[in-house]
Length: 201
Image (cartoon, rainbow, N blue to C red):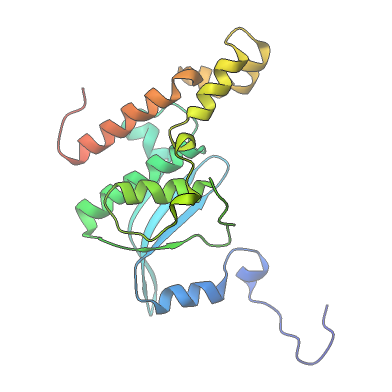
């Protein structure tokens, strides 16, 4: 509510919680490519963007839906392992087709907490060979591989009702949650091989 004559209404996207204009200005002024990481409950999207006077230009992009369509990913596309693989896919695309070597992270308004999906996406991009400055202590590597899911599933036991309730999506897709780390490793290997021109086995 306005209290004096100097009150200014924030820009619409800032009011909607979509854009931090001060942070965006600093990123654009740097002149470097931006690694934009965005996520919803069911998906992750990673883009590498160049800022131009007429607007943002997306050089390469990857969405977690591509994992199931192209690489046989059976687990949910909104979890941390899927976020890592989406970042890896974007990084591989950028390295092969876009000639991208480095970028800076643009996490938007997401709080940069340890173990957050944005750092899983970032880790995937870095593992693809793109130089992006970041702090190692923000990563929880066992979560990237899905080991925490596998441990929890084993703890519940495949015969329990809670197991079937919590992992209904996995079961419907034909993957045992206990095997998520192995599935993750296979999809990652297939993805890397596809960008080297090797055939999937």
